[in-house]
Length: 168
Image 1 (cartoon, rainbow, N blue to C red):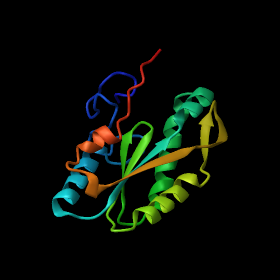
Image 2: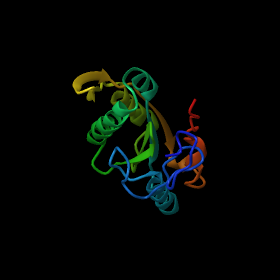
Image 3: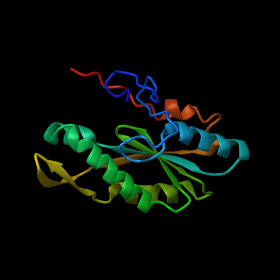
Image 4: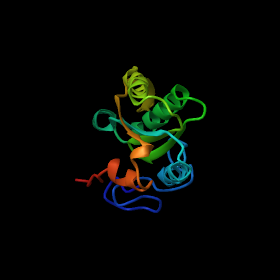
């Protein structure tokens, strides 16, 4: 997946999932599909925003190991999809980020407050560790970009770049 310094098919050198398919732990279409979606919006001048949700997986990886990460990403993606509007679309951006594309002319401050409520709500996730169920709180932050500020959908790769982590 590009996140461990190895570029796999469907990932960019910056660890972004550029696939069109839903072949990731979150069960969401990849960032390539998000780019196509945003490109259509730019060409048709559809108002909207992109919102990158970052999942703090380092703490979870350090305490519970890599196996717990997929459970957390799946749970956060389900929570986020349920929190967004029906016409909003959530994509898998990288191993620790999800990208929402919102087709809405909403006020940026109001929408930012709504996304802040989603990110700020406690997400207690049940994961399996050594055969035992454990509850962990998964921290979530977000960044938002109005689509009107983009000249090209591929600018999202620079705006929401995810640097690869080199295995030690």
